[in-house]
Image (tube, rainbow, N blue to C red; front, side, top):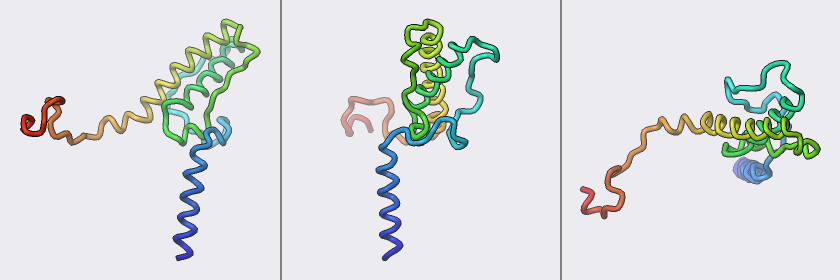
Length: 130
């Protein structure tokens, strides 16, 4: 009985904690990063590199499962928003990392065969679809 209470409390704590959003740092060793994700070339302009890192961190926190969201969140240097190089890199990285991580996370689910009773007849009632 005591074990069940501890397990229930632990489950509730984990569920509530999952709603908090970013609770860890993106530089953490356990922070997930999709494999072979692109990044700026070595020696790129510092404003571009900073914009890419900030935009990518923001993108990794969207359209993904909760584990990613606990490490990544919205990040943008407000002092450099008017800097065209920084802002373009931020927007490009946001879009790239968001879509890359989305594809990385959900690709495995797309390959699972789904059982559909009648995939061709969407508007048919049950009698017509047989």
